[in-house]
Image (tube, rainbow over all chains, first blue to last red; front, side, top):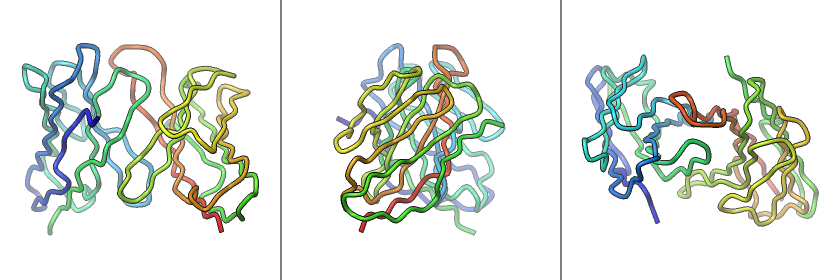
Length: 108
Length: 116
Protein backbone atom coordinates (compact mmCIF):
# COMPACT_ATOMS: atom_id res chain seq x y z
CA UNK A 1 0.00 0.00 0.00
CA UNK A 2 1.75 3.12 -1.23
CA UNK A 3 1.25 6.06 1.12
CA UNK A 4 2.44 8.57 -1.46
CA UNK A 5 2.00 8.97 -5.20
CA UNK A 6 4.62 10.74 -7.28
CA UNK A 7 5.11 10.98 -11.04
CA UNK A 8 7.91 8.65 -12.12
CA UNK A 9 9.79 11.34 -14.01
CA UNK A 10 9.82 15.06 -14.77
CA UNK A 11 11.89 17.48 -16.82
CA UNK A 12 12.73 21.06 -15.95
CA UNK A 13 14.82 23.68 -17.72
CA UNK A 14 17.94 24.91 -15.97
CA UNK A 15 17.31 28.15 -14.11
CA UNK A 16 13.57 27.60 -13.85
CA UNK A 17 11.66 26.55 -10.76
CA UNK A 18 11.13 22.81 -10.44
CA UNK A 19 7.80 21.90 -8.83
CA UNK A 20 7.55 18.29 -7.72
CA UNK A 21 4.08 17.09 -6.69
CA UNK A 22 3.20 14.43 -4.15
CA UNK A 23 -0.20 13.03 -3.22
CA UNK A 24 -0.70 11.59 0.27
CA UNK A 25 -4.46 11.44 0.73
CA UNK A 26 -4.31 8.98 3.67
CA UNK A 27 -1.87 11.00 5.78
CA UNK A 28 -2.49 10.81 9.54
CA UNK A 29 -2.40 13.66 12.01
CA UNK A 30 0.96 12.68 13.51
CA UNK A 31 2.70 12.14 10.17
CA UNK A 32 5.18 14.57 8.71
CA UNK A 33 5.89 15.08 5.01
CA UNK A 34 9.58 14.48 4.27
CA UNK A 35 11.50 15.06 1.05
CA UNK A 36 14.80 13.43 0.22
CA UNK A 37 16.79 13.23 -2.96
CA UNK A 38 19.34 10.78 -4.26
CA UNK A 39 21.97 11.70 -6.76
CA UNK A 40 23.32 8.77 -8.71
CA UNK A 41 25.67 6.51 -6.73
CA UNK A 42 25.24 8.45 -3.50
CA UNK A 43 23.17 7.92 -0.37
CA UNK A 44 19.88 9.85 -0.10
CA UNK A 45 20.11 13.41 1.17
CA UNK A 46 17.54 15.12 3.38
CA UNK A 47 15.94 18.21 1.81
CA UNK A 48 13.08 19.42 3.97
CA UNK A 49 10.12 18.31 6.04
CA UNK A 50 6.91 19.78 7.43
CA UNK A 51 3.79 18.95 9.38
CA UNK A 52 1.12 21.50 8.48
CA UNK A 53 2.76 24.78 7.61
CA UNK A 54 4.76 25.62 4.53
CA UNK A 55 8.49 25.41 5.09
CA UNK A 56 11.52 26.94 3.42
CA UNK A 57 15.22 26.36 3.80
CA UNK A 58 18.33 27.03 1.77
CA UNK A 59 17.61 24.12 -0.55
CA UNK A 60 13.90 24.24 -1.23
CA UNK A 61 10.37 25.20 -0.25
CA UNK A 62 7.64 22.80 0.81
CA UNK A 63 4.03 23.72 0.20
CA UNK A 64 1.45 21.55 1.99
CA UNK A 65 -2.23 21.93 1.14
CA UNK A 66 -4.59 22.90 3.91
CA UNK A 67 -6.15 19.44 4.03
CA UNK A 68 -2.61 17.94 4.03
CA UNK A 69 -3.54 15.51 1.28
CA UNK A 70 -0.88 16.73 -1.11
CA UNK A 71 2.31 18.74 -1.18
CA UNK A 72 4.74 20.31 -3.62
CA UNK A 73 8.49 20.56 -3.33
CA UNK A 74 9.85 23.65 -5.06
CA UNK A 75 13.46 24.05 -6.14
CA UNK A 76 13.44 27.77 -6.99
CA UNK A 77 16.29 27.91 -9.52
CA UNK A 78 17.11 24.43 -10.73
CA UNK A 79 20.66 23.63 -11.77
CA UNK A 80 22.08 20.60 -13.55
CA UNK A 81 23.28 19.31 -10.17
CA UNK A 82 19.65 19.03 -9.06
CA UNK A 83 19.17 16.09 -11.41
CA UNK A 84 18.27 13.27 -9.01
CA UNK A 85 15.52 10.99 -7.76
CA UNK A 86 13.28 12.88 -5.31
CA UNK A 87 11.40 10.94 -2.64
CA UNK A 88 8.29 12.16 -0.85
CA UNK A 89 7.63 10.28 2.39
CA UNK A 90 4.86 10.61 4.95
CA UNK A 91 5.63 9.18 8.35
CA UNK A 92 5.92 9.92 12.03
CA UNK A 93 9.56 10.62 12.90
CA UNK A 94 11.66 7.49 12.99
CA UNK A 95 11.25 4.70 10.51
CA UNK A 96 10.90 6.11 7.00
CA UNK A 97 9.70 4.03 4.07
CA UNK A 98 10.93 5.15 0.67
CA UNK A 99 8.88 4.70 -2.48
CA UNK A 100 10.19 4.92 -6.02
CA UNK A 101 10.27 8.70 -6.18
CA UNK A 102 10.37 11.09 -9.11
CA UNK A 103 13.37 11.17 -11.39
CA UNK A 104 13.89 14.89 -12.01
CA UNK A 105 16.01 15.71 -15.03
CA UNK A 106 17.26 19.27 -15.40
CA UNK A 107 17.78 20.16 -19.04
CA UNK A 108 20.48 22.65 -20.05
CA UNK B 1 28.92 17.81 10.04
CA UNK B 2 27.12 14.58 10.71
CA UNK B 3 28.98 11.68 9.35
CA UNK B 4 27.77 8.16 8.71
CA UNK B 5 30.60 5.94 7.61
CA UNK B 6 30.22 2.56 6.02
CA UNK B 7 33.26 0.34 6.21
CA UNK B 8 33.48 -0.75 2.57
CA UNK B 9 32.26 0.87 -0.63
CA UNK B 10 32.64 -2.30 -2.67
CA UNK B 11 32.73 -5.94 -1.63
CA UNK B 12 32.78 -9.17 -3.59
CA UNK B 13 31.90 -12.36 -1.72
CA UNK B 14 31.12 -15.95 -2.59
CA UNK B 15 27.85 -17.76 -2.01
CA UNK B 16 27.71 -19.15 1.50
CA UNK B 17 30.22 -16.75 3.00
CA UNK B 18 29.42 -14.82 6.15
CA UNK B 19 29.44 -11.09 5.43
CA UNK B 20 29.67 -8.19 7.85
CA UNK B 21 28.73 -4.66 6.82
CA UNK B 22 29.74 -2.08 9.37
CA UNK B 23 28.28 1.38 9.93
CA UNK B 24 29.47 4.05 12.35
CA UNK B 25 27.88 7.44 13.08
CA UNK B 26 29.46 10.29 15.00
CA UNK B 27 26.43 12.34 16.05
CA UNK B 28 25.27 10.35 19.08
CA UNK B 29 22.06 9.40 17.26
CA UNK B 30 19.79 6.88 18.90
CA UNK B 31 18.24 5.52 15.69
CA UNK B 32 20.13 3.53 13.10
CA UNK B 33 18.84 1.82 9.97
CA UNK B 34 19.92 -0.58 7.25
CA UNK B 35 18.33 -0.34 3.80
CA UNK B 36 19.04 -2.10 0.56
CA UNK B 37 18.48 -0.55 -2.83
CA UNK B 38 17.82 -2.41 -6.06
CA UNK B 39 16.92 -1.09 -9.52
CA UNK B 40 13.17 -0.69 -9.88
CA UNK B 41 12.51 -1.51 -6.22
CA UNK B 42 13.73 1.63 -4.48
CA UNK B 43 15.04 1.58 -0.92
CA UNK B 44 13.74 -1.16 1.32
CA UNK B 45 14.22 -1.26 5.07
CA UNK B 46 15.95 -4.39 6.37
CA UNK B 47 16.43 -3.73 10.09
CA UNK B 48 16.55 -0.78 12.43
CA UNK B 49 17.51 -0.03 15.99
CA UNK B 50 16.30 2.60 18.44
CA UNK B 51 18.85 1.87 21.13
CA UNK B 52 21.89 -0.18 22.04
CA UNK B 53 21.20 -3.92 21.95
CA UNK B 54 17.76 -3.26 20.55
CA UNK B 55 16.67 -4.25 17.03
CA UNK B 56 13.48 -4.30 15.04
CA UNK B 57 12.70 -6.03 11.76
CA UNK B 58 12.02 -3.87 8.79
CA UNK B 59 10.21 -4.86 5.63
CA UNK B 60 12.69 -7.46 4.32
CA UNK B 61 14.65 -8.96 7.24
CA UNK B 62 14.91 -12.52 5.88
CA UNK B 63 18.48 -13.67 5.42
CA UNK B 64 19.90 -10.85 7.54
CA UNK B 65 20.69 -10.15 11.16
CA UNK B 66 22.05 -7.08 12.93
CA UNK B 67 24.10 -6.17 15.95
CA UNK B 68 24.19 -2.96 17.99
CA UNK B 69 26.61 -3.35 20.85
CA UNK B 70 27.56 0.33 20.96
CA UNK B 71 25.44 3.37 20.26
CA UNK B 72 27.57 4.57 17.36
CA UNK B 73 27.90 1.25 15.54
CA UNK B 74 25.28 -0.82 13.71
CA UNK B 75 26.35 -3.94 11.88
CA UNK B 76 24.46 -5.87 9.21
CA UNK B 77 25.26 -9.56 8.99
CA UNK B 78 24.58 -11.93 6.15
CA UNK B 79 25.01 -15.35 7.78
CA UNK B 80 25.27 -17.19 4.47
CA UNK B 81 25.40 -14.86 1.50
CA UNK B 82 23.33 -15.69 -1.55
CA UNK B 83 23.34 -14.23 -5.05
CA UNK B 84 19.96 -12.54 -4.48
CA UNK B 85 21.62 -10.45 -1.79
CA UNK B 86 23.74 -8.70 -4.39
CA UNK B 87 22.71 -5.11 -3.85
CA UNK B 88 23.60 -1.63 -2.64
CA UNK B 89 23.34 -1.44 1.15
CA UNK B 90 22.75 1.90 2.82
CA UNK B 91 23.09 2.73 6.49
CA UNK B 92 21.38 5.74 8.07
CA UNK B 93 21.01 7.35 11.48
CA UNK B 94 18.67 9.88 13.07
CA UNK B 95 17.75 11.45 16.38
CA UNK B 96 14.93 9.98 18.37
CA UNK B 97 11.82 11.78 19.48
CA UNK B 98 9.43 14.39 18.17
CA UNK B 99 10.00 17.96 17.23
CA UNK B 100 11.14 20.05 14.31
CA UNK B 101 14.54 18.44 13.88
CA UNK B 102 13.65 14.82 14.26
CA UNK B 103 13.05 12.39 11.46
CA UNK B 104 15.97 13.65 9.40
CA UNK B 105 17.94 10.64 8.24
CA UNK B 106 21.64 10.92 7.56
CA UNK B 107 22.88 8.33 5.10
CA UNK B 108 26.24 6.80 4.45
CA UNK B 109 27.67 6.52 0.96
CA UNK B 110 26.57 2.92 0.57
CA UNK B 111 28.25 -0.46 0.26
CA UNK B 112 27.88 -2.26 -3.04
CA UNK B 113 27.93 -6.00 -2.39
CA UNK B 114 28.31 -8.55 -5.14
CA UNK B 115 27.76 -12.20 -4.25
CA UNK B 116 29.13 -14.65 -6.80
